[in-house]
Amino acid sequence: MRAVVVYESMYGNTHLIADAIGDGLRDATGIDEVVVVSVHEADAALAPGADLLVVGGPTHAHGMSRESTREDAVRQANEPDSGLTLDPDAEGPGLREWFDSLHRLDTSAAAFDTRIDLPVALTGRASKGIARRLRKLRCHQVAEPHSFLITTETELEPDEAKHAREWGAELAASLAAEHTTSSR
Image (tube, rainbow, N blue to C red; front, top):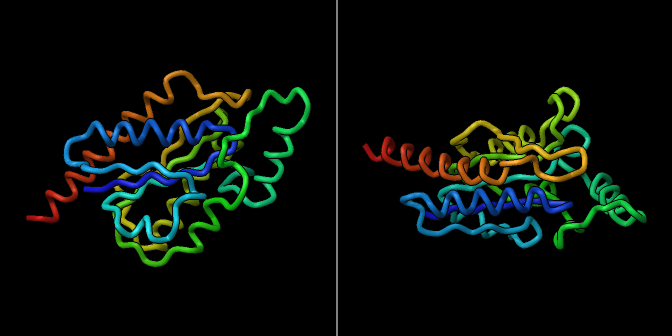
């Protein structure tokens, strides 16, 4: 089976989480190939060949990023003494634009986000919007949308990368169970 992890990242946290999810998928039995790719490199032909599509991005203004929120993130990183470093793939189109380039997929999928470690009522969750877009593409969700937490200083909370690796392994197990059930 082939798994594809597509991520959008501004300051590198979502990129780190995507890599950890990919590692968890690689460790799993039954996954032959794992591709972890930035949304900027994920052309419309990549997703249709996947048995599992995992998509994630940062939470901006209670949901998925928009052009204006990405531009604001770049502006913040460029401020003197901001302490922020842009991910190499931060600038350019995001998940919304990528989703707009896709057509019906009919594959298994999962959605994740990174968000500040505060109540969801205050932060929102990009993963909910990502899951909604995946459903519109006829993807079958193998897991509930998942959040990985960052500090207010935009660093991953302790053990979040480990948590992401474990979640990747759980996704692989869910996919294997789904394939076993459907082959009966």
